[in-house]
Length: 510
Image (tube, rainbow, N blue to C red):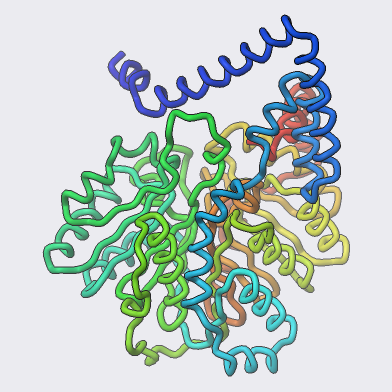
Protein backbone atom coordinates (compact mmCIF):
# COMPACT_ATOMS: atom_id res chain seq x y z
CA UNK A 1 0.00 0.00 0.00
CA UNK A 2 2.85 2.37 0.85
CA UNK A 3 4.39 1.87 -2.60
CA UNK A 4 1.04 2.56 -4.28
CA UNK A 5 0.53 5.78 -2.31
CA UNK A 6 4.10 6.83 -3.03
CA UNK A 7 3.57 6.24 -6.75
CA UNK A 8 0.28 8.15 -6.79
CA UNK A 9 1.93 11.11 -5.10
CA UNK A 10 5.10 10.95 -7.19
CA UNK A 11 6.15 13.75 -9.49
CA UNK A 12 5.68 11.71 -12.66
CA UNK A 13 2.08 10.81 -11.68
CA UNK A 14 1.14 14.38 -10.81
CA UNK A 15 2.72 15.83 -13.96
CA UNK A 16 1.13 13.14 -16.15
CA UNK A 17 -2.29 13.78 -14.63
CA UNK A 18 -1.87 17.51 -15.25
CA UNK A 19 -1.03 16.89 -18.93
CA UNK A 20 -3.94 14.45 -19.34
CA UNK A 21 -6.27 17.03 -17.76
CA UNK A 22 -5.11 19.61 -20.32
CA UNK A 23 -5.71 17.19 -23.22
CA UNK A 24 -9.21 16.34 -21.94
CA UNK A 25 -10.04 20.02 -21.39
CA UNK A 26 -8.90 20.91 -24.90
CA UNK A 27 -10.91 18.06 -26.41
CA UNK A 28 -14.06 19.04 -24.46
CA UNK A 29 -13.71 22.67 -25.52
CA UNK A 30 -13.46 21.69 -29.17
CA UNK A 31 -16.39 19.27 -28.84
CA UNK A 32 -18.63 21.87 -27.15
CA UNK A 33 -17.81 24.51 -29.73
CA UNK A 34 -18.54 22.16 -32.63
CA UNK A 35 -21.92 21.28 -31.10
CA UNK A 36 -22.99 24.91 -30.84
CA UNK A 37 -21.34 26.41 -33.88
CA UNK A 38 -21.63 24.64 -37.22
CA UNK A 39 -19.19 27.12 -38.72
CA UNK A 40 -16.53 26.19 -36.15
CA UNK A 41 -17.01 22.51 -36.99
CA UNK A 42 -16.61 23.27 -40.69
CA UNK A 43 -13.47 25.30 -40.06
CA UNK A 44 -11.86 22.42 -38.13
CA UNK A 45 -12.79 19.96 -40.89
CA UNK A 46 -11.16 22.23 -43.47
CA UNK A 47 -8.08 22.55 -41.24
CA UNK A 48 -7.80 18.76 -41.04
CA UNK A 49 -8.01 18.42 -44.85
CA UNK A 50 -5.33 21.10 -45.30
CA UNK A 51 -3.15 19.43 -42.68
CA UNK A 52 -3.40 16.08 -44.50
CA UNK A 53 -2.37 17.78 -47.76
CA UNK A 54 0.51 19.46 -45.94
CA UNK A 55 1.69 16.15 -44.45
CA UNK A 56 1.50 14.40 -47.83
CA UNK A 57 3.72 17.04 -49.43
CA UNK A 58 6.12 17.32 -46.49
CA UNK A 59 9.66 15.97 -46.77
CA UNK A 60 9.48 13.30 -44.10
CA UNK A 61 9.40 9.54 -43.73
CA UNK A 62 6.25 7.92 -45.26
CA UNK A 63 5.65 5.92 -42.09
CA UNK A 64 5.59 9.12 -40.03
CA UNK A 65 3.05 10.60 -42.45
CA UNK A 66 0.77 7.57 -42.18
CA UNK A 67 1.00 7.61 -38.38
CA UNK A 68 -0.55 11.11 -38.39
CA UNK A 69 -2.92 10.85 -41.36
CA UNK A 70 -4.81 7.87 -39.91
CA UNK A 71 -5.90 9.56 -36.64
CA UNK A 72 -6.69 12.78 -38.51
CA UNK A 73 -8.97 10.92 -40.90
CA UNK A 74 -10.60 8.96 -38.06
CA UNK A 75 -11.06 12.06 -35.89
CA UNK A 76 -11.17 14.93 -38.41
CA UNK A 77 -12.43 17.48 -35.88
CA UNK A 78 -9.62 16.91 -33.39
CA UNK A 79 -6.87 15.39 -35.53
CA UNK A 80 -5.86 18.41 -37.59
CA UNK A 81 -5.87 20.71 -34.57
CA UNK A 82 -3.71 18.35 -32.54
CA UNK A 83 -1.22 18.00 -35.39
CA UNK A 84 -0.85 21.78 -35.61
CA UNK A 85 -0.13 21.90 -31.89
CA UNK A 86 2.06 18.83 -31.40
CA UNK A 87 2.82 17.26 -34.79
CA UNK A 88 6.15 18.82 -35.59
CA UNK A 89 8.86 16.15 -35.63
CA UNK A 90 11.43 18.45 -34.08
CA UNK A 91 11.92 21.72 -32.22
CA UNK A 92 10.00 24.89 -32.95
CA UNK A 93 11.76 27.59 -34.98
CA UNK A 94 12.02 29.69 -31.83
CA UNK A 95 13.63 26.87 -29.87
CA UNK A 96 15.97 26.00 -32.76
CA UNK A 97 17.18 29.60 -32.86
CA UNK A 98 17.61 29.65 -29.10
CA UNK A 99 19.62 26.42 -29.13
CA UNK A 100 21.68 27.30 -32.19
CA UNK A 101 24.53 28.31 -29.90
CA UNK A 102 25.24 24.60 -29.37
CA UNK A 103 26.18 23.97 -33.00
CA UNK A 104 27.82 27.41 -33.32
CA UNK A 105 30.19 26.71 -30.43
CA UNK A 106 31.07 23.31 -31.88
CA UNK A 107 31.94 24.89 -35.24
CA UNK A 108 34.16 27.42 -33.49
CA UNK A 109 36.01 24.87 -31.39
CA UNK A 110 36.47 21.80 -33.61
CA UNK A 111 38.78 21.86 -36.63
CA UNK A 112 39.85 19.11 -38.97
CA UNK A 113 43.56 18.34 -39.26
CA UNK A 114 44.01 18.19 -43.05
CA UNK A 115 47.01 15.85 -42.95
CA UNK A 116 44.86 13.28 -41.14
CA UNK A 117 42.08 13.62 -43.71
CA UNK A 118 44.53 13.40 -46.62
CA UNK A 119 46.11 10.26 -45.17
CA UNK A 120 42.70 8.67 -44.82
CA UNK A 121 41.86 9.57 -48.42
CA UNK A 122 44.98 7.79 -49.62
CA UNK A 123 44.10 4.69 -47.58
CA UNK A 124 40.42 4.45 -48.58
CA UNK A 125 38.25 6.82 -50.59
CA UNK A 126 35.15 5.12 -49.15
CA UNK A 127 36.26 5.74 -45.57
CA UNK A 128 37.33 9.27 -46.50
CA UNK A 129 33.89 10.09 -47.93
CA UNK A 130 32.17 8.82 -44.78
CA UNK A 131 34.50 10.80 -42.50
CA UNK A 132 34.08 13.92 -44.64
CA UNK A 133 30.29 13.62 -44.42
CA UNK A 134 30.44 13.40 -40.61
CA UNK A 135 32.79 16.38 -40.45
CA UNK A 136 30.59 18.50 -42.72
CA UNK A 137 27.28 17.76 -41.00
CA UNK A 138 28.17 17.24 -37.33
CA UNK A 139 31.19 19.59 -37.21
CA UNK A 140 33.26 16.74 -35.75
CA UNK A 141 36.74 15.93 -37.19
CA UNK A 142 38.36 12.54 -37.66
CA UNK A 143 41.52 11.66 -35.68
CA UNK A 144 44.35 9.18 -36.32
CA UNK A 145 46.17 9.18 -32.97
CA UNK A 146 43.50 8.20 -30.45
CA UNK A 147 43.57 4.76 -28.80
CA UNK A 148 40.19 3.18 -28.05
CA UNK A 149 39.13 0.30 -25.83
CA UNK A 150 35.79 -1.47 -26.29
CA UNK A 151 34.19 -2.33 -22.94
CA UNK A 152 31.69 -5.10 -23.55
CA UNK A 153 29.73 -4.94 -20.29
CA UNK A 154 28.46 -2.51 -17.71
CA UNK A 155 30.56 -4.20 -15.06
CA UNK A 156 33.74 -3.63 -17.08
CA UNK A 157 32.84 -0.01 -17.76
CA UNK A 158 32.06 0.62 -14.07
CA UNK A 159 35.48 -0.73 -13.06
CA UNK A 160 37.32 1.42 -15.63
CA UNK A 161 35.24 4.51 -14.85
CA UNK A 162 35.83 4.46 -11.10
CA UNK A 163 39.57 3.96 -11.62
CA UNK A 164 39.79 6.90 -14.04
CA UNK A 165 37.61 9.17 -11.89
CA UNK A 166 39.96 8.69 -8.96
CA UNK A 167 42.85 9.90 -11.14
CA UNK A 168 41.11 13.18 -12.10
CA UNK A 169 43.14 16.32 -11.35
CA UNK A 170 41.39 19.18 -13.17
CA UNK A 171 37.82 18.39 -14.21
CA UNK A 172 35.15 15.71 -14.61
CA UNK A 173 32.24 16.12 -17.03
CA UNK A 174 29.27 13.72 -16.93
CA UNK A 175 26.28 13.84 -19.28
CA UNK A 176 23.67 11.07 -19.04
CA UNK A 177 20.08 10.34 -19.98
CA UNK A 178 19.46 8.36 -16.78
CA UNK A 179 20.98 8.63 -13.32
CA UNK A 180 19.44 6.59 -10.52
CA UNK A 181 20.39 6.29 -6.88
CA UNK A 182 21.89 2.89 -6.05
CA UNK A 183 25.18 1.02 -5.88
CA UNK A 184 26.56 2.37 -9.17
CA UNK A 185 25.61 6.02 -8.79
CA UNK A 186 26.29 6.22 -5.05
CA UNK A 187 29.82 4.84 -5.58
CA UNK A 188 30.46 7.40 -8.34
CA UNK A 189 28.93 10.21 -6.27
CA UNK A 190 31.23 9.45 -3.32
CA UNK A 191 34.23 9.78 -5.65
CA UNK A 192 32.88 13.03 -7.10
CA UNK A 193 32.42 14.52 -3.61
CA UNK A 194 36.03 13.72 -2.76
CA UNK A 195 37.22 15.23 -6.04
CA UNK A 196 35.33 18.44 -5.36
CA UNK A 197 37.17 18.71 -2.02
CA UNK A 198 40.44 18.33 -3.96
CA UNK A 199 39.49 21.29 -6.15
CA UNK A 200 38.42 19.33 -9.23
CA UNK A 201 35.75 21.03 -11.37
CA UNK A 202 32.88 18.50 -11.44
CA UNK A 203 29.89 19.10 -13.75
CA UNK A 204 26.84 16.95 -14.47
CA UNK A 205 24.05 17.17 -17.05
CA UNK A 206 21.09 14.82 -16.84
CA UNK A 207 17.87 14.59 -18.82
CA UNK A 208 14.89 15.36 -16.60
CA UNK A 209 12.49 13.09 -18.48
CA UNK A 210 14.93 10.18 -18.28
CA UNK A 211 15.36 10.72 -14.53
CA UNK A 212 11.82 11.72 -13.58
CA UNK A 213 11.11 8.37 -11.88
CA UNK A 214 14.74 7.83 -10.84
CA UNK A 215 15.79 10.91 -8.89
CA UNK A 216 14.14 13.13 -6.28
CA UNK A 217 12.60 16.40 -7.49
CA UNK A 218 15.22 19.14 -7.89
CA UNK A 219 18.06 16.67 -7.41
CA UNK A 220 20.30 19.21 -9.13
CA UNK A 221 20.03 21.39 -6.00
CA UNK A 222 21.23 18.48 -3.87
CA UNK A 223 24.26 18.02 -6.13
CA UNK A 224 24.99 21.76 -6.08
CA UNK A 225 25.02 21.60 -2.25
CA UNK A 226 27.92 19.14 -2.54
CA UNK A 227 29.84 21.58 -4.74
CA UNK A 228 28.99 19.63 -7.90
CA UNK A 229 27.76 21.90 -10.70
CA UNK A 230 24.61 20.51 -12.32
CA UNK A 231 22.27 21.31 -15.22
CA UNK A 232 18.96 19.65 -16.07
CA UNK A 233 18.03 19.20 -19.73
CA UNK A 234 14.42 19.83 -20.80
CA UNK A 235 12.66 19.94 -17.39
CA UNK A 236 9.56 17.71 -17.24
CA UNK A 237 6.84 20.29 -16.59
CA UNK A 238 3.04 19.85 -16.27
CA UNK A 239 2.51 21.70 -19.56
CA UNK A 240 1.16 20.11 -22.74
CA UNK A 241 4.03 20.49 -25.19
CA UNK A 242 5.60 18.48 -28.01
CA UNK A 243 8.97 19.69 -26.69
CA UNK A 244 8.91 16.69 -24.34
CA UNK A 245 9.76 14.58 -27.40
CA UNK A 246 13.21 16.15 -27.70
CA UNK A 247 15.48 14.55 -25.12
CA UNK A 248 19.18 14.43 -24.40
CA UNK A 249 19.89 10.72 -24.87
CA UNK A 250 23.69 11.15 -24.91
CA UNK A 251 26.07 9.40 -22.50
CA UNK A 252 29.37 11.23 -22.17
CA UNK A 253 32.19 11.14 -19.62
CA UNK A 254 35.25 13.37 -19.99
CA UNK A 255 38.08 13.33 -17.45
CA UNK A 256 40.78 16.03 -17.65
CA UNK A 257 40.34 16.10 -21.45
CA UNK A 258 42.49 12.96 -21.67
CA UNK A 259 40.00 10.12 -21.20
CA UNK A 260 36.42 9.90 -22.43
CA UNK A 261 33.60 7.35 -22.58
CA UNK A 262 30.43 7.01 -24.59
CA UNK A 263 28.03 4.20 -25.44
CA UNK A 264 24.76 2.73 -24.23
CA UNK A 265 25.30 2.58 -20.47
CA UNK A 266 23.51 4.91 -18.05
CA UNK A 267 24.35 5.35 -14.37
CA UNK A 268 21.86 2.92 -12.81
CA UNK A 269 22.19 -0.49 -11.17
CA UNK A 270 20.55 -2.60 -13.88
CA UNK A 271 23.34 -1.57 -16.27
CA UNK A 272 25.91 -3.34 -14.11
CA UNK A 273 23.53 -6.18 -13.16
CA UNK A 274 23.55 -5.13 -9.51
CA UNK A 275 19.76 -5.51 -9.76
CA UNK A 276 17.82 -7.61 -12.23
CA UNK A 277 14.95 -5.96 -14.11
CA UNK A 278 14.75 -7.75 -17.43
CA UNK A 279 17.07 -10.69 -16.98
CA UNK A 280 20.77 -10.17 -17.68
CA UNK A 281 21.41 -6.64 -18.97
CA UNK A 282 23.79 -6.56 -21.94
CA UNK A 283 25.44 -3.24 -22.79
CA UNK A 284 28.73 -1.63 -23.76
CA UNK A 285 30.83 1.54 -23.79
CA UNK A 286 33.88 2.80 -25.64
CA UNK A 287 36.90 4.29 -23.86
CA UNK A 288 38.76 6.95 -25.85
CA UNK A 289 42.13 8.57 -25.15
CA UNK A 290 44.23 11.04 -27.10
CA UNK A 291 43.16 13.87 -29.39
CA UNK A 292 39.64 12.53 -30.12
CA UNK A 293 38.64 13.25 -26.51
CA UNK A 294 38.48 16.91 -27.50
CA UNK A 295 35.36 16.35 -29.64
CA UNK A 296 33.46 14.85 -26.70
CA UNK A 297 34.72 17.66 -24.46
CA UNK A 298 33.31 20.25 -26.86
CA UNK A 299 30.01 18.33 -27.15
CA UNK A 300 29.60 18.51 -23.39
CA UNK A 301 30.68 22.15 -23.07
CA UNK A 302 28.42 23.36 -25.89
CA UNK A 303 25.40 21.78 -24.17
CA UNK A 304 26.57 23.10 -20.81
CA UNK A 305 26.95 26.64 -22.16
CA UNK A 306 23.41 26.56 -23.54
CA UNK A 307 21.85 25.24 -20.34
CA UNK A 308 23.93 27.38 -17.99
CA UNK A 309 23.86 30.44 -20.25
CA UNK A 310 27.62 30.91 -20.01
CA UNK A 311 30.27 31.80 -22.56
CA UNK A 312 33.47 30.06 -21.48
CA UNK A 313 36.74 29.75 -23.30
CA UNK A 314 36.64 26.06 -24.24
CA UNK A 315 40.36 25.92 -24.92
CA UNK A 316 41.12 26.23 -21.21
CA UNK A 317 39.83 22.63 -20.99
CA UNK A 318 42.06 21.32 -23.77
CA UNK A 319 45.26 19.61 -22.56
CA UNK A 320 48.46 21.25 -23.74
CA UNK A 321 49.69 17.85 -24.87
CA UNK A 322 48.29 14.34 -25.13
CA UNK A 323 50.00 11.12 -24.16
CA UNK A 324 50.78 9.49 -27.52
CA UNK A 325 52.95 6.74 -26.05
CA UNK A 326 50.23 4.11 -26.48
CA UNK A 327 50.42 2.54 -29.93
CA UNK A 328 47.20 2.83 -31.93
CA UNK A 329 46.04 2.15 -35.45
CA UNK A 330 43.22 3.39 -37.62
CA UNK A 331 40.91 6.39 -37.41
CA UNK A 332 38.44 7.53 -34.76
CA UNK A 333 35.64 10.07 -35.20
CA UNK A 334 33.28 10.94 -32.35
CA UNK A 335 30.15 12.65 -33.68
CA UNK A 336 26.82 13.94 -32.47
CA UNK A 337 23.36 14.47 -33.91
CA UNK A 338 20.47 16.68 -32.85
CA UNK A 339 16.99 17.83 -33.89
CA UNK A 340 18.34 21.33 -34.51
CA UNK A 341 18.38 20.74 -38.26
CA UNK A 342 16.88 18.37 -40.81
CA UNK A 343 20.12 16.48 -41.35
CA UNK A 344 19.79 13.03 -39.76
CA UNK A 345 23.47 12.29 -39.23
CA UNK A 346 23.05 9.09 -37.20
CA UNK A 347 20.71 7.53 -39.74
CA UNK A 348 22.97 8.49 -42.63
CA UNK A 349 26.04 7.01 -40.92
CA UNK A 350 24.16 3.74 -40.40
CA UNK A 351 22.79 3.70 -43.96
CA UNK A 352 26.23 4.35 -45.45
CA UNK A 353 27.68 1.43 -43.49
CA UNK A 354 24.88 -0.87 -44.68
CA UNK A 355 25.21 0.22 -48.30
CA UNK A 356 29.02 -0.09 -48.31
CA UNK A 357 29.13 -3.56 -46.73
CA UNK A 358 30.61 -6.34 -48.86
CA UNK A 359 30.85 -9.31 -46.51
CA UNK A 360 28.89 -8.80 -43.29
CA UNK A 361 26.94 -6.37 -41.10
CA UNK A 362 26.49 -7.28 -37.41
CA UNK A 363 24.09 -5.05 -35.50
CA UNK A 364 23.06 -4.81 -31.85
CA UNK A 365 19.99 -2.76 -30.94
CA UNK A 366 17.39 -2.79 -28.16
CA UNK A 367 14.69 -1.53 -30.56
CA UNK A 368 14.31 -2.56 -34.19
CA UNK A 369 11.79 0.16 -35.04
CA UNK A 370 13.33 1.06 -38.37
CA UNK A 371 11.82 3.33 -41.00
CA UNK A 372 11.29 2.35 -44.63
CA UNK A 373 14.76 3.50 -45.77
CA UNK A 374 16.51 1.41 -43.14
CA UNK A 375 14.38 -1.68 -43.76
CA UNK A 376 14.99 -1.50 -47.52
CA UNK A 377 18.74 -0.98 -47.05
CA UNK A 378 19.02 -4.00 -44.72
CA UNK A 379 16.95 -6.18 -47.07
CA UNK A 380 18.92 -5.15 -50.17
CA UNK A 381 22.25 -5.76 -48.42
CA UNK A 382 21.16 -9.29 -47.56
CA UNK A 383 19.83 -9.91 -51.07
CA UNK A 384 23.18 -8.95 -52.61
CA UNK A 385 24.91 -11.58 -50.49
CA UNK A 386 25.98 -9.65 -47.39
CA UNK A 387 25.68 -11.58 -44.11
CA UNK A 388 23.28 -9.34 -42.16
CA UNK A 389 22.68 -10.27 -38.52
CA UNK A 390 20.74 -8.31 -35.91
CA UNK A 391 20.68 -8.88 -32.13
CA UNK A 392 17.51 -7.77 -30.29
CA UNK A 393 16.32 -8.43 -26.70
CA UNK A 394 14.51 -11.57 -25.56
CA UNK A 395 13.10 -9.92 -22.45
CA UNK A 396 11.90 -6.40 -23.39
CA UNK A 397 11.90 -3.29 -21.22
CA UNK A 398 8.92 -1.82 -23.11
CA UNK A 399 6.33 -4.34 -24.36
CA UNK A 400 4.90 -1.99 -27.01
CA UNK A 401 8.36 -1.22 -28.46
CA UNK A 402 9.09 -4.95 -28.52
CA UNK A 403 5.82 -5.54 -30.37
CA UNK A 404 6.94 -3.14 -33.11
CA UNK A 405 10.40 -4.74 -33.15
CA UNK A 406 8.83 -8.17 -33.69
CA UNK A 407 6.51 -6.81 -36.38
CA UNK A 408 9.61 -6.13 -38.52
CA UNK A 409 11.02 -9.65 -38.26
CA UNK A 410 9.09 -11.28 -41.10
CA UNK A 411 10.04 -8.72 -43.76
CA UNK A 412 13.72 -9.00 -42.86
CA UNK A 413 13.70 -12.80 -42.59
CA UNK A 414 12.10 -12.95 -46.04
CA UNK A 415 15.11 -11.03 -47.38
CA UNK A 416 17.58 -13.42 -45.74
CA UNK A 417 18.50 -11.31 -42.70
CA UNK A 418 19.33 -13.34 -39.59
CA UNK A 419 17.73 -12.15 -36.34
CA UNK A 420 18.65 -13.21 -32.82
CA UNK A 421 16.96 -12.55 -29.50
CA UNK A 422 19.34 -12.25 -26.56
CA UNK A 423 18.09 -15.20 -24.50
CA UNK A 424 19.64 -14.26 -21.11
CA UNK A 425 17.64 -11.03 -20.97
CA UNK A 426 17.73 -7.50 -22.37
CA UNK A 427 20.21 -6.27 -24.98
CA UNK A 428 20.69 -2.51 -24.67
CA UNK A 429 23.87 -2.25 -26.77
CA UNK A 430 23.89 -0.04 -29.88
CA UNK A 431 26.68 -1.18 -32.19
CA UNK A 432 27.38 -1.70 -35.90
CA UNK A 433 30.40 -3.61 -37.19
CA UNK A 434 31.09 -4.10 -40.91
CA UNK A 435 33.64 -6.20 -42.85
CA UNK A 436 36.32 -6.17 -40.11
CA UNK A 437 36.87 -2.55 -41.14
CA UNK A 438 34.21 -0.23 -39.71
CA UNK A 439 32.35 0.01 -36.41
CA UNK A 440 30.07 2.47 -34.65
CA UNK A 441 29.57 2.45 -30.89
CA UNK A 442 27.24 4.99 -29.35
CA UNK A 443 23.88 5.92 -27.90
CA UNK A 444 21.89 5.57 -31.13
CA UNK A 445 18.94 3.17 -31.17
CA UNK A 446 17.35 1.95 -34.39
CA UNK A 447 14.13 3.84 -33.71
CA UNK A 448 12.47 7.11 -34.70
CA UNK A 449 13.31 8.88 -31.45
CA UNK A 450 17.05 8.32 -31.69
CA UNK A 451 17.25 8.96 -35.42
CA UNK A 452 15.00 12.05 -35.57
CA UNK A 453 14.12 13.54 -32.18
CA UNK A 454 16.94 13.11 -29.67
CA UNK A 455 20.36 14.55 -29.02
CA UNK A 456 22.63 11.54 -29.62
CA UNK A 457 26.31 10.75 -30.01
CA UNK A 458 28.48 7.94 -31.31
CA UNK A 459 32.00 7.05 -32.44
CA UNK A 460 32.78 5.98 -36.01
CA UNK A 461 35.91 3.85 -36.31
CA UNK A 462 37.94 2.68 -39.28
CA UNK A 463 40.59 -0.06 -39.00
CA UNK A 464 41.05 0.28 -35.24
CA UNK A 465 41.65 -2.64 -32.90
CA UNK A 466 38.28 -1.93 -31.28
CA UNK A 467 36.52 -2.90 -34.53
CA UNK A 468 37.61 -6.50 -33.94
CA UNK A 469 36.58 -6.33 -30.29
CA UNK A 470 33.08 -5.18 -31.25
CA UNK A 471 32.83 -8.08 -33.70
CA UNK A 472 34.01 -10.65 -31.15
CA UNK A 473 31.58 -9.36 -28.53
CA UNK A 474 28.62 -9.53 -30.90
CA UNK A 475 29.52 -13.01 -32.16
CA UNK A 476 29.75 -14.24 -28.56
CA UNK A 477 26.29 -12.84 -27.89
CA UNK A 478 24.85 -14.69 -30.90
CA UNK A 479 26.13 -17.97 -29.41
CA UNK A 480 23.91 -17.61 -26.33
CA UNK A 481 20.94 -16.14 -28.18
CA UNK A 482 17.96 -17.71 -29.93
CA UNK A 483 17.73 -17.36 -33.70
CA UNK A 484 14.28 -16.25 -34.84
CA UNK A 485 12.90 -18.44 -37.64
CA UNK A 486 10.01 -18.25 -40.08
CA UNK A 487 8.47 -21.10 -38.11
CA UNK A 488 8.38 -18.81 -35.07
CA UNK A 489 6.58 -16.17 -37.12
CA UNK A 490 4.05 -18.68 -38.47
CA UNK A 491 3.33 -20.00 -34.97
CA UNK A 492 2.60 -16.51 -33.62
CA UNK A 493 -1.12 -16.21 -32.72
CA UNK A 494 -3.09 -14.08 -35.20
CA UNK A 495 -4.31 -11.73 -32.49
CA UNK A 496 -0.66 -10.93 -31.64
CA UNK A 497 0.17 -10.31 -35.28
CA UNK A 498 -2.77 -7.93 -35.61
CA UNK A 499 -1.73 -6.09 -32.44
CA UNK A 500 1.87 -5.79 -33.65
CA UNK A 501 0.65 -4.46 -36.98
CA UNK A 502 -1.43 -1.77 -35.29
CA UNK A 503 1.48 -0.69 -33.10
CA UNK A 504 3.76 -0.61 -36.13
CA UNK A 505 1.51 1.99 -37.81
CA UNK A 506 1.97 4.35 -34.87
CA UNK A 507 5.63 3.52 -34.20
CA UNK A 508 6.86 7.04 -35.17
CA UNK A 509 4.62 8.59 -32.50
CA UNK A 510 5.67 6.30 -29.64
